[in-house]
Image (cartoon, rainbow, N blue to C red; front, top):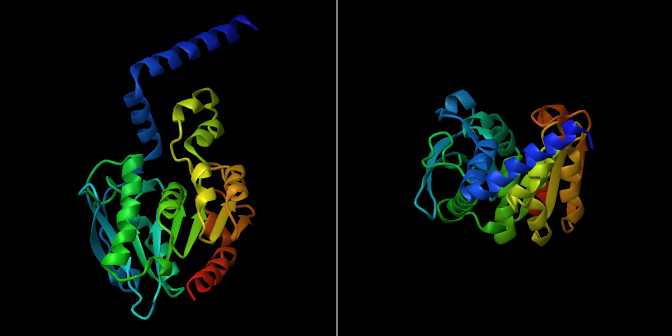
Length: 276
């Protein structure tokens, strides 16, 4: 081992020791800063979107007020709960929600705590509470039985979706570019030495085997943020029935645009099959 390598190893070891001695609060703070990147609220209206649209309020179990958008399809007997990624806000995802609604389902698009107009500060336990509250809203306020609801998650939203469906059976689960775990993400970012500090955060790999609902997955084979190997690892441990669509040439943020019909056609079939 060279002197430079010995120095680097010593420095890294000291840093890990300091973090360990500082305690979990420092680790949690670092994890939250890396994971949650909320954007401020932006109102939208039906005229600008071109479809019916309602802004709704959802209350969580710990009494946090969440803001969300609801795209009703009065003739539809099914709904999709869409859980968005880690950056921006729900308004950014309204065009995607509009496309989903066109497939014959009402769509609920909530903002997590600390995002958009929602109250609170984002963290992992809150993320799961927010997803649970959104599902409860569809059941109790909008009258959709759980077996007529499909939960869809993109990126971080996929982790929330997996956690939710593992504890609450629904008609189906759709995952788009979903990470395997926080530990796997740390390794993919070149932070392998720090990966153990992630613990079991966002442990989708540990939760997805217990899901009985049909699963439809999409992942770009050039995803530069959540490597495709993570999507393949999730798919490998998921129970049947399951389908994985690898989108050639797609990165993390352009997967739906690159996929085009390779996304919308399988999604339409899936919705029709699990909520006929």
